[in-house]
Length: 392
Image (cartoon, rainbow, N blue to C red):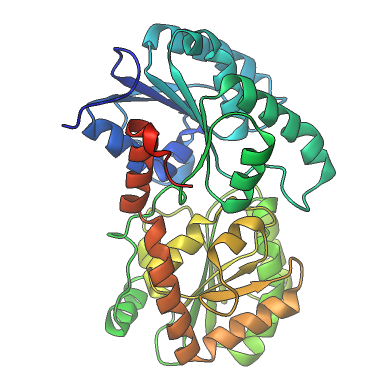
């Protein structure tokens, strides 16, 4: 066991987020690091795992189910805040590491006394709601809040893309670092042979054969993920590539409207609404291409998963996608809302195996910086070797 350099005598760390699925999906490398260093890992977040088709929070030593609401105006947040104050007072944590905008602000409010007593408060921004070219209302609402809490209630602000890092470093006064996302398991996401891909497709009841093509789009079915843009591009794709299946993996409030749109566009039989799946690596390995049409993205976990599987990616040109995609090298970037350009780029990749293979290999090489092992090492520097300054 490595000697800890965290402050104080406590050997407990509290991770907070609005929902528990966030902790499960994004903080496994951090939990493993803390356990390796001999720390207990406690989690405080709303239990939404029943919506996630078997997802389990299996690495926390203690779990607090708090009624956080995504909306900053939700009345439930007051009860969550009060409960969090009690948890922090009783927990005597060495570090409180908060995530997501609402839980991040409420946690830093609740941690005020603990921080004065020596608890270290870390906030990971998984993509600021304000960004270059973003809506003015988000700058007016979220920017002043984030600036205040960064300057007065945060010991370390971690960012996951260059644009957020540069903004925070120049506009906020707290220490700011950058890590390469949350860490994707290279054991789960890795290339497979054509024979293995065909076998997976057969097992998953996906199209098989030389002319079959599979597109994977992963993400919650919410307006920001903008799956409607991809659906509207599909008729153009199908005119050239009729044996093509689009898989939409995820659940959310837009499911009914997206299904209705798919039907109205005549896409029955060409779109699979998978729902939330804990076997995404199988569908990723069985696909040919990953697509994301998000309006706003901090980084794009789904694209990293595709890159580590050796697949090209096509995505809208937002800040998180620009971080991952070198246009024309490991994939293509298209303007938000340009469905014709999206369809054309998808067809360009699907119709040229040599191009797809070349882009996939580039992405695989670039993706190594975003693996769970790489992020583990970055977090280790920020937590236990602060004199090195971490990854910038």
